[in-house]
Image (cartoon, rainbow, N blue to C red; front, side, top):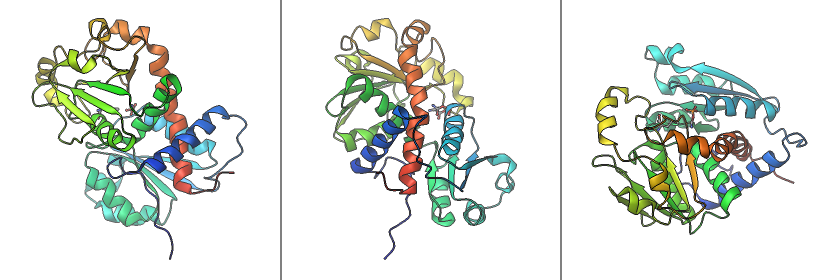
Length: 301
Ligand code: CP
Ligand code: NVA
């Protein structure tokens, strides 16, 4: 019996062993970026279908694919027939006959899942309205490099706890067994939770004794019409010096980026902690290589 094709569609229902394999690969790729001879994507072409904007995810995947020996084909979702109503399943059937893997950034999680089902090639979720799993792997890599194993740590997520990034954090907390505290205003808490997660409106309480303070934008892509309403709702849900004073001494401050200064994070903190935050952004590249290699199932010597 052949083993099922690997995909990376989200952290929901994902497992610790696979995360650890990906992170170990990411660490090797980072430490040996110039010397490493693995080319798991040699002779392959991988498509990126993006219907939302991207800087980090797009560039890190395009560079990762090339450095792993493959070719990257960037496709703006709106330029495809998909944008004129061709069904996902037909797009998937076509790409499945032409390329070796696909990385998708879009709105509905079900679209990525449907694509994976019909394309029959490895498929990656590069952000949907539900999850941003690639981001969280790079975040965990960053945290473990800087403060050691994440298991048992307290991570405080401040701001829009209903967003995709927060939701992937919720799933990660259960898989890797760390304490996740989400603090956001009424109406902006996570719709999913588990026994490793607490949620409240109290930012100070969330930050108290935290090892990591983490935030994301107040207005996720696709929600631009809610900008004014959200700007009002999120007042007070900002990472700034007053909040950092509640956290553990030497607590890390992370942001998935892009950052909106003096909204979800103060300009001062962002600049003071830019080294860590841009190390985190750089780790997107190394983590993507870990994901792509893991999908290829090429044995590691
Ligand atoms: N953090 C992140 O995914 O950034 P981009 O939207 O620039 O890809
Ligand atoms: N929550 C944000 C993440 C951006 C990387 C969004 O979906 O726009």
